Every structure is written in C-alpha cells, then in structure tokens.
View 1 (cartoon, protein in one colour):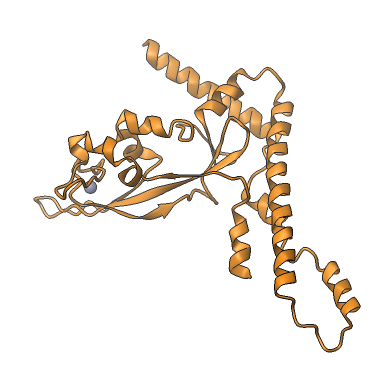
View 2 (cartoon, rainbow, N blue to C red; view 1 turned 120 degrees about the vertical axis):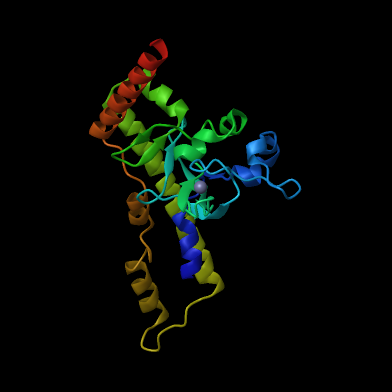
Length: 247
Ligand SMILES: [Zn+2]
C-alpha cells in the first residue's frame, strides 16, 4: 500500500520530460564525430573538460536542485525534468584523473549538444531558472511573462490556480484509488468494534495520507512578489542578452 501510495507523489496529468540524448537522440548525435564511440552505433557526450568521450559514462538520473527540477510551461502547468547524469574518469598523459560530473539539462554539457538536439527540448529547457522557487521557466512561459498585459497579481493567481487544479485532481484520484483498494481488500475488523464503529473511525481518519500537503511541499505556490521577481530577473537577463547582441 505504501509503495502504491508513493506512485501518487507524481500527480496525475503531470508530464515528465526525460533528457538523455544518448538514448533518445542517437541518430542526431551520430552526425557529430565528437559524440561517436568505437562500438557500432554508440554515442556518448564528450567531456566538456577534457574534450573526449573516452572516460565518460552515464551514472544515473537526477532532477535535483532542491526537490525536483520543474518547468513552468505555457499552459501554466508544471512539468518535471529528469536528466541523465554523467561522470568523466578520463586519465590524461600526466596521470591526472578528470573526475568531473555533469547533468544533461544544464551547464556545459547541455550547452555543447548539437543545435538539432537542443531544439528537441526547446519547450522545456531554458537558460532561465527562477532562484526563489527553483523552477525552470520554459522559453514559451518567459515570453508569456514578458508580454503579459495583466497584473503580476493576476499572473500569480493564474499560476496558483493551475497548481491547485493539479492538486485537486491528484487528490481525487488518490482518494478513488484507496477506496477501490479498501473494497477489494477489506481490512480485518478489530474484535472490539462493530462494523459501524469501524466505519466511523475510518471516516475520522480520512484521508489516510494528506495528498494536498504533500503536493504543496512539492510545488511552490508563486506569490505576487515571486512573479514580480521572476519578471524582473527575466527582464534584466533579456536586456543583457540583447545588449550582447548589439555590441
Ligand atoms: Zn573529463
């Protein structure tokens, strides 16, 4: 039951974007000689530090920053980004071991992927990460925020509503699931209780697991100051980028 419950930590309707181009974009990576490995058809990112893929391997998956790397998309819902993690153990001619680690969706390793690969994830991976909520803002959402004609108050309300809708849906599904399970596998009635007493006790304890609370721990509600800050940082980033383009 506990294991089943854990399934609901990922709420219904939530998209999970897995970024591992070595697995999902092999054909595109093969076009770039620096990604090919000796084995037939094999590809691996070259290490951004030593420029060779000889010592590189995929060590697992991460979505870590604080809780989970999330992306706010244009529909104002949240997608979760999971990326491959890499480690380079290349030993150079002077016997120095590289020992650097990387993730697929940010930093130098992400930057060096061929354009055609990055284009596949352009709706999700953004250079812009909001530091107050630890969320990635998708490029589409950045545009939406920059050109939004309403107030920050309004935008934060729309974001909060979209999270609340996801939470309600997840909670309802969890509730249905536990009720169905209880019908299929009725718990043993304690000897000291009548069925009515037991039913009463059960409803007092409902819900057995607080899905709403878990959800709000997982997703940060964007308040008006947060949205304002997102906008300000985004505006400054865009401004700096356009200054770079001009100069
Ligand atoms: Zn290296």
